[in-house]
Structure formats: C-alpha cells, structure tokens
Length: 92
Image (cartoon, rainbow, N blue to C red; front, side):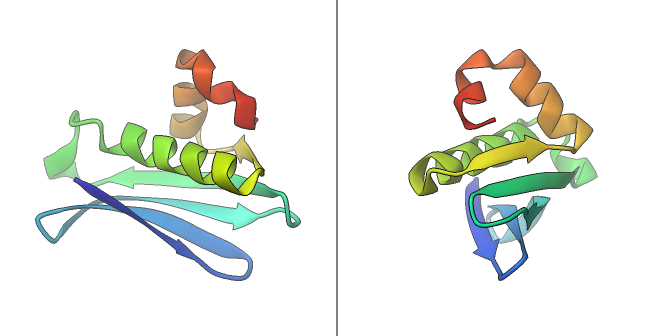
C-alpha cells in the first residue's frame, strides 16, 4: 500500500494505491497557513476493512508534524481515528 500526497494552494488530498489501483482518497482544505481541515475520506469497496482510511489519517498526521501545522478533522471517519488513538492528538 502506497500513500501519496497531492497539495495545491487551497486544497489537497492523500491517495492510497495498491499495485496501481486507487484504494482510497482523503481530501483536505487549507485553513490559513498553519492548519488543514480533513473534510472527506473515501475507501473503495474492495479495500474495506484493510486499514486504508487509517493509513491515510496517519499520513496526514506525519505531514502535519513535519510541517508543524495542525489538523481539524471534520470528516467523521478521521475524527473517529483521532478519538481512538490518543498519540495522534498532538496535531489537533
């Protein structure tokens, strides 16, 4: 499973691929220069239950830590991952 990030001026997304097939996508919007808002996470049906969404949230956390920015998880799925995994909350 590979997670790639695509960042644009005001929006971006993380894409999970498995052997060239898109497994999932998590979109975000920039809120100023030091914060992103995760607004949607979608996993293809064939990849349900394989941790794809969670891997994308972890990639977003790694990005936030590297850039010293914070995350607002408006997406219910992303919020649930933050709620369950306390060690990720340093970027909230």
